[in-house]
Length: 427
Ligand code: ATP
Image: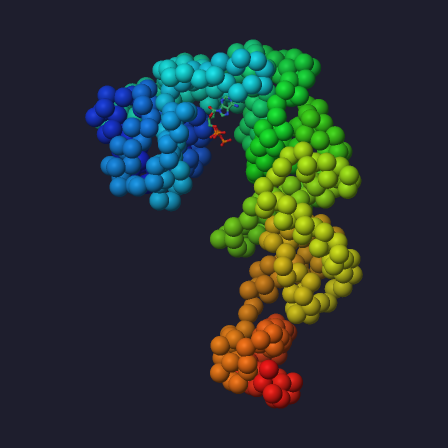
């Protein structure tokens, strides 16, 4: 069994109290149950209730003194913001049907068995009843636990991939993440669906979300290889089918990210963006343009694409690869202004250990080096407000980076000399 945090336990207790009070049955469902049986750490709990999820969520929040509840009446769902676990979803049990392949489903309120029936794979179609002081058996109408134990990915019915072709991408993720295999009939159903070109029925927005989810995985390389093996990459973009052209880069990104997670665990890095930069950087310019236009990535990605241009304009790859000795101030001049994600991409892209070391040095320490002195002190020392104040601060940072200024007094002495030499009138 996996383990869960104190906060999740408190949440489950509140759900169980509200369930008894209201007589509405509540269940932990989906990934939470799967991960629990896989013995993984589990923070992300989803709750399904056989009744009004919005009123239920409000009562749970009240009990826990949580004030932030978002409600979506049209979907009969609510999200409660827990202090450190983020948003916890409470949804009304529902059944679904797909009017045509690739369409969004039509939903109506229902019971837990019907709710589980609409899910992607049997191991995601289990529910744990939450009821105060009562141990109720696992709800597992489709033998998901058996499949989980055998390491099998099994769809719920033969037309599942036709109903929702994004399940093909989900299967790729589970196969690579859990090292599971497609059960024989599921494999056949997937092949039939792919032959019928079902992936052409889903919107670019949904494909983009699936691609992001794949790049979010621990080892996206394995998932990309599997997508290639199943002949699916062409649906994302034909330019991505030459997997061998970027396998090395993606592996290198993976090691840069792992190294950074170990060295600086508190660093927040959006890893999927680093992988995405890896993919975009290997596309031909026309393909890259077309790829970006097709998928409308968030603004944060566009900013990083602009940074790739800066990398080119500053000729950073050549400079870093050709110079084994770069002064810290020169490194800062070269790399300042680039995001952590672009720098990690660059670290994977350069081919020499010394270039990698230089980027790592910048990321870990140099980018944080700032003068202790500030503009205020410079004004007190006789400078007038204006551009020159920034110039002096930059000059001090440069000296400090190269180890020529250590203490605050060193900085003050240097500033005084600078003012006396260049700014006879203090401007
Ligand atoms: P993870 O986030 O680790 O990939 P998860 O199981 O939490 O796993 P979510 O994408 O958060 O995945 O989905 C939650 C649950 O909703 C799943 O466990 C599954 O039961 C159901 N689900 C999600 N997407 C689909 C889909 N396309 N078709 C059917 N059921 C789905």
